[in-house]
Length: 394
Ligand SMILES: Cc1ncc(COP(=O)(O)O)c(C=O)c1O
Image (cartoon, rainbow, N blue to C red; front, side, top):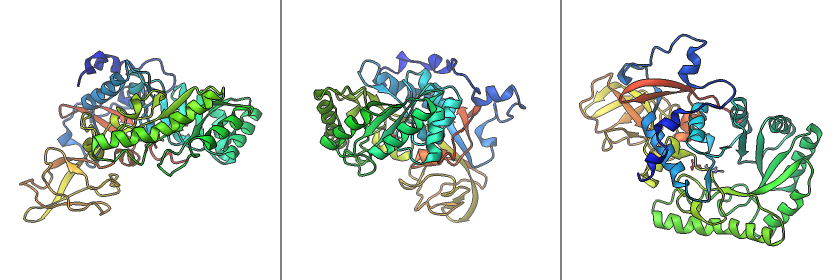
């Protein structure tokens, strides 16, 4: 964990300088009753409860920002991972330059809490959304991804009418096959057309190597992700050769930060999951700790070795497979499909009522299911942070 000490826990505590509502139980305490869970051991909590190990998350935040400390690219963490304003403030306090969002609704939450610089790494389409987008752009620096002239023209008209300016990043498809214009001439031509529109500013390119983040072999992942990102860098160079300045190339992930994030020509790293981590990402980048878990209880012991936990797919994202039980990596969860139950096969001698922590396979869809993160250290609740953007799908 070289370099973690450079930005320590003290600077992570310094989250002042934001307008708007203060996150966390400390802020809530001013207007409401104190949260009686604070100071209590985890075993006394009701279940299921979404937990965050504060020390582990702080180490993840510091480790990632320190990786980029002396490198050209800077960190713009993806808010979609946790959707929690307090955690996002800690990411900025640790040294991130701004936040990335998947949804306009997430960006609205951040701007309402005083975040001055937000990238929506996604297409924003439709009159209702454009009205919201330009209102937001009157309050903060907002950038949006586009991959077609029609999106850019619509944003340009809405922004011009409102007197706002929206930054545009041309999204380049570097192999994922989701959104994005093809690299090279198609992307460069779109950038040149967009650059002349009023009410918008061509700010650069976005490219996400999402089809490669789950490649388990690290050397293979690195080589393939770099080859993919090179296409966006080449597009950048093509534009610059044509006299079109490219302010920023934004992309990368928690699983490729140390590969594509180090390439000359990449300016911003949109890593998200490193903050909380999950079972899947821990296989990919074990240098980050699994800070997120769901506290669950054994509610039944229906047979020898069999235990049933009070959480199913309605309480944890399962897109990347079954969860793991913290401290019991060998205990087998054969499948993760039931809505409200998880059945464990080779359970040890847990009594009914035993409290356990499930590490979900996918943090981002898990956080989206909860309204708060119960924050703990050394087995004791130390704070409760609202997940303000939970369920913000629009
Ligand atoms: C556009 C974009 N950028 C970056 C990321 C990386 O996030 P993470 O670090 O959680 O993989 C994602 C993940 O889905 C994404 O969609």
